[in-house]
Image (cartoon, rainbow, N blue to C red; front, side, top):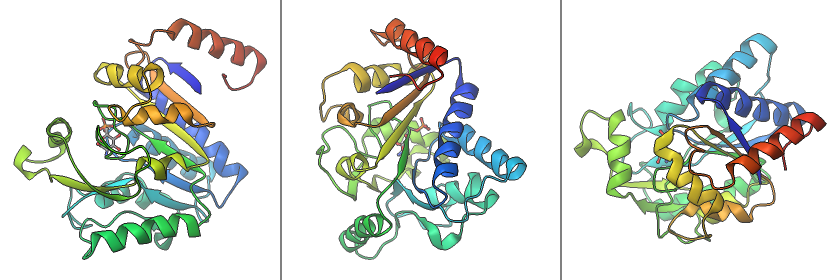
Length: 262
Ligand code: GLP
C-alpha cells in the first residue's frame, strides 16, 4: 500500500491526476475504471486541463464506470451517465464508443451485468481503477455485507448512502433505492487501484479501510490485499489513522529518494 497524505482537496486532485496522466502516457490505450461523487471532480478538472494545455491524449482510452443508479435513464440529470459526460467526457477527446457506464434502465439486469463483466475482460481488464469511498466504507455501491467476491450486480443502497447522496437530488425521496455496481471481486481484479478521500466525514471509513480488519463491514478493506494500491487522502480524512506519522515518514523518505512511498 502506498499511502500519500496531502494537505487538502486541491493537492489530492493534483496528485491523483498526475498518477492517471503518468499511466496514460506510459500506455495510451489505458483501460480506466472511474468513479463518480464529489471526490474525483477536482481530479477530472486537472485531467481536462492537462488535455487542453498539454495535449494529454484520451483518444485510445477505454473507460468503465463503477456504477449507476437503477431506474435512471442516461439523460437524467442525477444519473452517473450525465455526471460523467458533464464533468469529464465532454471536455476530453475520448471516443464515445469507448465509454462504458452501467445502464440503469437495462431491460434485463442480470444479462446486462454479465455483459459488463465480459466487456471488461474483452478490453483486457482494467489497468487503473480510481475509487472514492462512502462514509460506511463502501467502494462503488458495495454496501456493508457485500460479498468480497461479488461481481457486477444490482445492490440495495443503505439509508445512510441515500441520505449522503440526496444532496444531488431535489429531495431524498427522489434518490433511487438500488444501483448497478461493479462487485468487490470485479474491482479487485484491476491491475492497479487508486483510492481518494477528502474531508473529516471520511476519516472513520479511511481508518477502517487501511488499518481495520478485512471485512464485509467495510468493503474497501479488501483493498489491503491488493498488491498495487495507492491511497491519496487529505489531512482531514487521515486524522484517525493510527500509523499516520509512519505513513508520513515513508512519504518523506520516498521524496528524498524520488520514488513512490512504500
Ligand atoms: C457514491 C458512489 C461512490 C463514491 C461515494 C462517495 O456512493 N457510488 O463511488 O465513492 O458515493 O461520494 P463522494 O465522493 O461524493 O463523497
